[in-house]
Length: 249
Image (cartoon, rainbow, N blue to C red; front, side, top):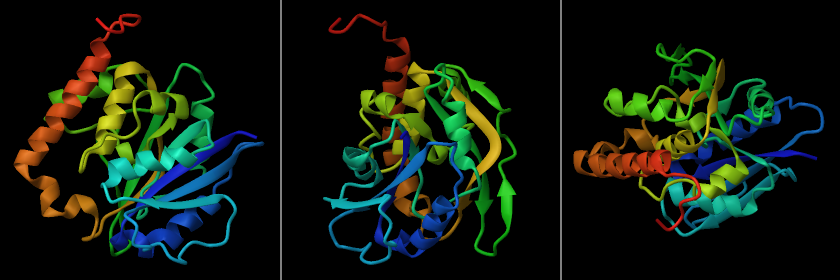
């Protein structure tokens, strides 16, 4: 039976949202014969997840040394059974049929990965859609990287919605070992080596709240941000330019 593995890193502040995240996953209707696996990985070994998760054989819970979201996500891959891997943050919610759309798009062997539109979810329950989504369709190799460079390192897609073939994810080394922007680095690396597909139907509620990592002051430190951007760009450009069959040259 084919499996889609959903990877969720967790830190203490995001634990209260896990029950909603699980409910959005449990409500997914998958194509016939498919099943999902939820890999919930604590960033650290403090036991913050505790008894918050329901008794469900489809859930794989783990922990590891604190390393930030990139190493936490990548460590979770050790338990991934799926041929597809879907990113899902602990404070976000899947919208109906999000996984089915990813699976259907990746049934086409031309594509290595997908992203989708999102709805921002605000504390008062209101939502808003990103105005500059690309049209539904193919994201050609290198196109997202070019956009990112030309638009002062702003992405046209939300990396937190990534669904990617497990083999491609492993070939790229998983998520980047950065303190932030690890998902941006992965999307750009994937785009550097394979065509993707953008799904215009919103597939996720992206929760906006004061405790999210992207709201921390450290996330916007200009020196660290410049360093993250530099290594992300260098890696993606190297992958885009690297000639096949030229290992060791």
